[in-house]
Length: 68
View 1 (cartoon, rainbow, N blue to C red):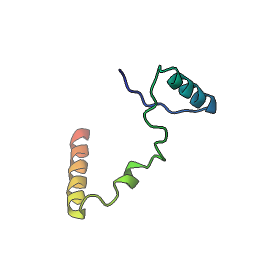
View 2 (cartoon, rainbow, N blue to C red):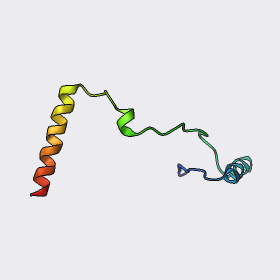
View 3 (cartoon, one colour):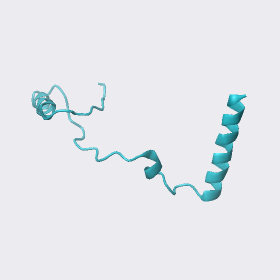
View 4 (tube, rainbow, N blue to C red):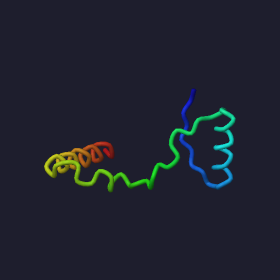
């Protein structure tokens, strides 16, 4: 079976999904994923500053090489 992630844009779609689940055509795995965070917010402060500086230097150098 395939697993899909969908975003409901209408309350009617929510009811339809539950009806499909009652008919045993689909299975709702998780109903609420919570608010999505920006990646920068999610990973802020996760790298030590020295590692982050080295990574930033590497990215800058790679971009300069790519532009050449």
